[in-house]
Image (cartoon, rainbow, N blue to C red; front, side, top):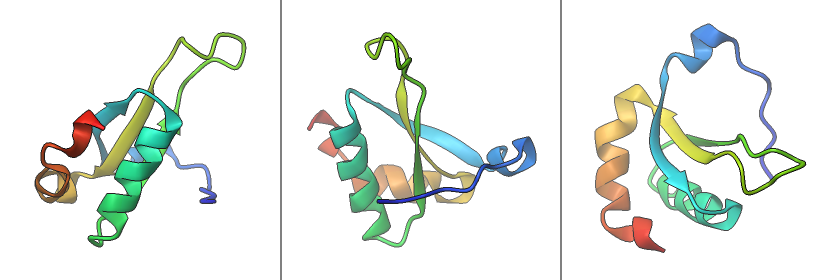
Amino acid sequence: LHLWAPMSSGQMANWTLIHTARDRQEAELLRGMLESNDIHAIITDQRSSVYPMMGNIELLVDRDDVLRALHVMGDRTDL
């Protein structure tokens, strides 16, 4: 379980969306893959609690790690 402190808009400016996941499991699997390669990643779950099918689950990395993260993920985003 990862707990994240709230981030200011200035801190979020350094994070870049690299993948929109179908479900939380896919996002966690990809985050684990990235973190095992020393790439810090966060998941934002923008789904509605009332309508969970509405909204996105997004995987973000620091903008300096985008190319490396995409390389690590390769074709594995079709989980």
